[in-house]
Image (tube, rainbow over all chains, first blue to last red; front, side, top):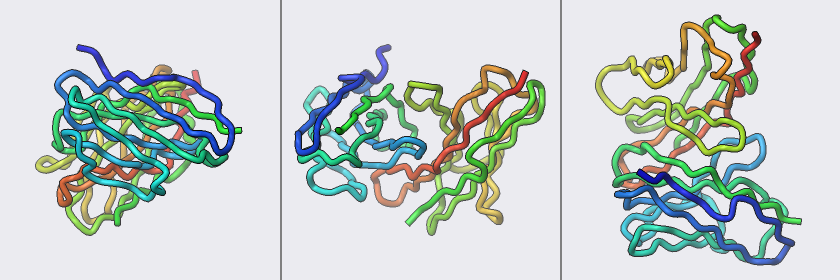
Length: 113
Length: 115
């Protein structure tokens, strides 16, 4: 059984640029969530997708957007990057809306200069 | 709104000693509670969870936690620490009400195990 995979693992961008992060969910999972983990902090919920529809959103501005595809893979897009966007971005999948048990990928570490 | 407070950003124990990591939560509805572990440069792995039923829950690697509603706590324990337990531990809360299982995490507790 393949787990959650994310790409790229590391990337460096400059302020104002745009970035796309990708996530392949675990086989059989139809729900994907994205979290931002700043250095020394716990993960913060960005948004969740269930069967290709956004199903919940945290306190993040509209320049954070996402997609879920028919195969349940997902993208996180961030426009107009700011220095504070530097963080580990974690994707997590779950078999359905279930009970909140999430299966996390290893993350994409974004550095904004 | 829900919140989680983890007491102690860094805890050190000797190998073989008791591990106790503290977590208090705030929730206006019955909570679902979780402990996740994060090893360096890795994602998070579920240790254990409480949803309903028995308040003492057992997880992987010998960890357990007890849900105490009156104290709004969900502390994580392990009787005997092992070197491989050194990692960062996150407590998280959610609820079933909204249909969106958004987890609210604490800031984490880094556990060091001294040989």
